Image (cartoon, rainbow, N blue to C red; front, side, top):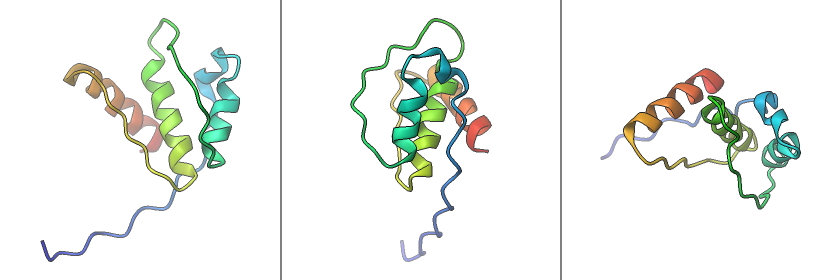
Length: 91
């Protein structure tokens, strides 16, 4: 429509590693994202309830570099968990 788009929000600050500390290169991965890098990675989440917060922190790190992020999940239940984690990390 003819309505102009709103101005984008300023990027958030880089997140703390949080539970990414559980992974040998987890903090370095987040740091690379926050610095605007494009690290090549395959991530298999460790067992437990932290995977959605880890996705949210990776998204926050990417956003902090001024870029966007797209998260694709298999169903509504998982989308709800990721949405809650993103809200907690980003507000």
